[in-house]
Amino acid sequence: MMMMRILGVVLASWGAVAMSQGEERPFMGVKGAPLSVQEADALGIPGGGRVDYVIPDCGAAAAGLRRGDILVEAMGKPILGFYDMVLLVRGQKIGDEVKMTVLRAGERKELTVTLRSYRDWNMMKGTPAPPIRVDEWVGDAQDLAALKGKVVVLVFWSIKSETWKLLEPDFQALAKDLEGKIQVVGIHVANDRFEEQTPDAVKAVLKEKPFGGPVGLASGLPFRNPSEGRGNPLIQTDYRFDQLPAIVVVDAEGKIAFKSSGADLYVSDVRKAVTDIVGK
Image (cartoon, rainbow, N blue to C red; front, side, top):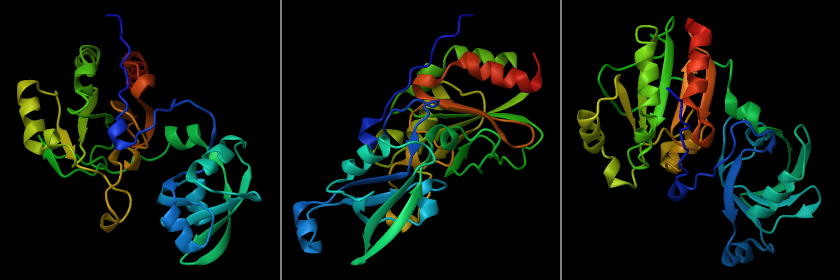
């Protein structure tokens, strides 16, 4: 069967930004927005970029940047809006150090961020697979630690974006061909904003079209303190993808052997990654 390309769906309403999984570019690891005129006036500055989220395990987090910091200067240049910071980082190289000034609780602080590779941060190959964190299971509950010794294929999808439809027929054929050699686990990534993605709605879809394995229902997978808000569940997932569908292959040692999502996802690549581990 000719393997068709699984097209990525960018969930613009969630603020997801499409990026090539293999893209080699400098990466700081923050999300934010420009200050309003009123906010800048209250702080007595001409402008700035507010940090809304610091992505774990990235240069910004290592440098001590925090949610709520106000970016006011970087590399001797004023930051009048968050996009100024984006443009500055784009002009640097992986490994470069970016010296910046932030306002934190009214005090100016000097920080140095070492820019890392987006590809290296994103791919996660060879790193231990994070635990699966979901709200409830349709089928038997799955614990990656308990599945150690088996090859696990994690499929992240959403009925809202209808990406589950894009996993057919190629992925189903792969799962059937390797039945008994792999454990397929589905993770439905929902956003509380969409009523269409309630647990009952997902269960209705699965009843009509069985997945072929257990499915975990995840409403947000927040990294940060829940009291600070859920934010974007795709960006915040432990598996670091910003498009659906996404597939992660975990080897028998519990380490990530393959990961791809969105426009970069080919079932033929998944098949190769799995057969390299379990044999044909």
